Image (cartoon, rainbow, N blue to C red; front, top):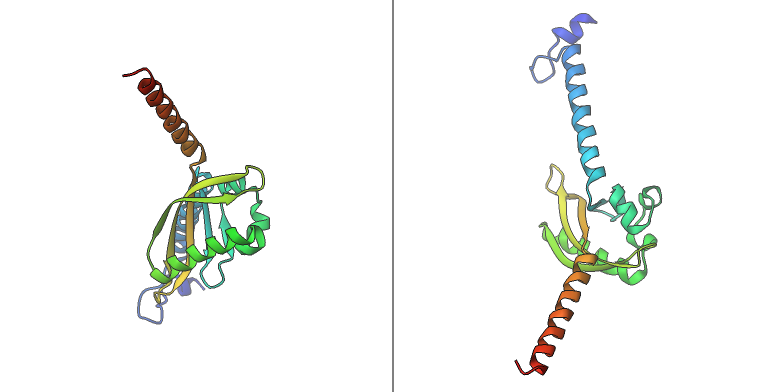
Length: 173
């Protein structure tokens, strides 16, 4: 067995890795995976991943659970039609299919979604396909930032500016 790990050659003529190298590389890969999971899980924006073939959720981060009010255990393996009102699901799936067909990233500056606990929210969503080795779309990644409060603040500022303009105009200035 010792010779199998240290001195054996792979079928392609390359020297096989030693057991220590395998353990070291596996540990490094696990650390990198843990770090990536930590980053995705703690992002303040919703991150979701769907399988390209049937658009079922395979990943939803904590911010997504909080925003949508849907626990990931309930969302994973399901489609938009199983989680959202029909009109919202149809719109989301149409955007998803458009991105998959184009093969390019797409930014939706504003889209509304109905959430379970926060009412209607306005999101800025970036969608992008992820391709396999053959160049076929395997996944669709979406990252959505809740911009509802920003849009409300912009509306309040615009209303205030209109009131001031009217007041100044009425005062004869």
